[in-house]
Image (cartoon, rainbow, N blue to C red; front, top):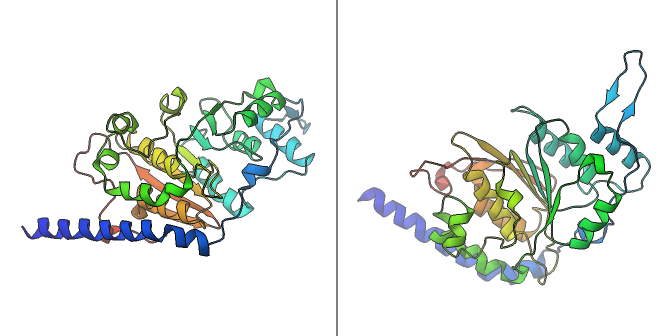
Length: 303
């Protein structure tokens, strides 16, 4: 009885907190400046027609094609990746440490750092997929991308708007969203956070690293990243038992990215934050009916 009462009290506290956050969203947008996403204004990157680069050191040393492509691209272009050097270092660690590389990398967004992600995740066996809200960006990037490097990108049409973020945050207490084993079950339960336009590629592999840097979320009419953050967390929880997923969320200085990542990726799973990039390590929940959506609040680790 005592444990049940404590659980009920914690649930009531969380509902009150979420309700307060929802009511505060208009004020947050008024007092916290949200800078336009560089993704929204930057042109797609341009590639040069090189599939590999040789450096004659007497041993026939050859750079992998994606690495050579990235070096040539950034050396010959005024474009730079959208993340800072410190943020990129955090992402690189997630891609190259703790488990064998290359890894399956899913990126919400397609922009100036596309060549970089391909380079960091080069090699046989890994898959790098980009999900982009603007179909014209995909067309332009494919036209400029050397066929040998195989840009894999898909269009996603989001049906959320940033103005509804406060209401959607309250779904943190909705069983339709937080008591489901995977996104398919969440769709069947009518969870309003599931992006409806995810391609088949999303569920074809288990993702080792997911970067959420899209869709755009710099004014109330834009889709916002609520659904992308939720989908990333659910993909991690649905992996094979024992697996973990690094989920990176960019622009956590903004209200939506900050609050939704804490609510749906869980503060207890946050392990590192550099600049505007926050890293979560989310374990699989598959086959574990005991593990709650998020660990108990008292076990949460500070970022």
